[in-house]
Amino acid sequence: MSPIFRGMIGSTFFLILALPLRAGDADAAKAIVEKAIKAAGSEEKLSKLKAATVKFKGTLHEGDMNISLTGEVITQGADQSRVVIQADINGQAITFTEVLNRDKGWKKEDATKEMSADEVKEAQNGANESWVVSLVPLKNKAYTLAALGEIKVDDRPAVGVRVSTKDHRDVNLYFDKDTHLLVKSEMRVKDEAAGMEVNQETFYGDYKDVAGIKEAMKLVIKRDGKPFLNAQVEEVRREEKVDDSTFDKP
Image (cartoon, rainbow, N blue to C red; front, side):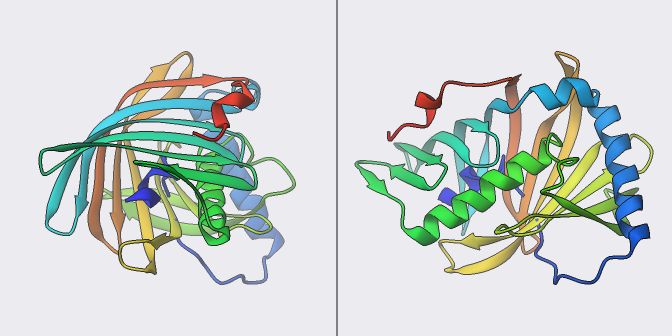
């Protein structure tokens, strides 16, 4: 279950083979991002807010089970996250916690366990995806942008941007062609239950103005085209910084 909690979220995302980029690709991508940042709430406002807290409720689809859950996700930058999920599985209440603090990570259900190197890497990819989706870092030179062309998302035209950075998987972002708001993201993720990589798509909708920023209040995640999570955001808060102790070992 844990991969869902990393990229909210995660959440999310298609790995594309690196191709030589033309200057026009980068320029077109930058123009798309400029419009997206302006539509979301201005570069000046977004650039100051490097931390976010999201509270949500939803349903996780895993196998033939539909699991009701609630959660809180706190992220800061590209390498810190804390996720606490409370779920009801066959009448049994379960609390799951996952924390990433830069190059270390922990999972806790009954007892706290350190993440393996592979698990830390997967969590880092998820945290980076959340950071990219926030739009805050997209004008940073550490991130390379390339235009992906136009697709349809929910029968509406959307334009895409591939976001690449060192040591992380590429993230594809798609923005509504008219509103310029983010409507879909894609990345390759590890499905722990299946033991293999899958293509994860996250769809964003029901935007509301929260403290001067347009925030998506509905998230739908699919893996290899199949339903994985439906979530309704109940509260979202962006801040300049949260205390580093938030990401201590649980």
